[in-house]
Length: 103
Image (cartoon, rainbow, N blue to C red; front, side):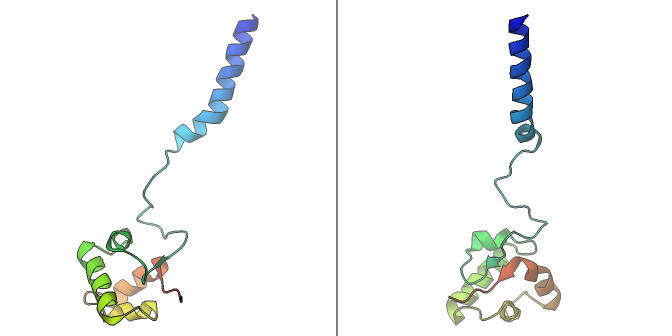
C-alpha cells in the first residue's frame, strides 16, 4: 500500500506542476493581433521587428527603415505619414504598436 500512496503522490505532484505548462504552450513569437506589452521604437526597429507589427509587411517595413536611414530618426509616430504606403487609416492601426523614444 505504501508504494501505491507514493505513486499517487507523485502523480498529483506531476499534474499540479507540469499540467499548466502543457496546457498552455509557450509561444516564441509575439501575438500578431494584440499590441506588444511594450510598443516598438520605430527609430530602433529592424525590418524583421517591424514585420511583426500587424499591418506592416516586408516591403513597408523596408520603406520605413530606408526612410529613417535617408532622413534621420522620426520625431513622432505621425512622421510615418511621410513614408509611402502609410496613410491616416493605417497610421491609426499602427499607433498602438509603435513609439518614438527620445535618446
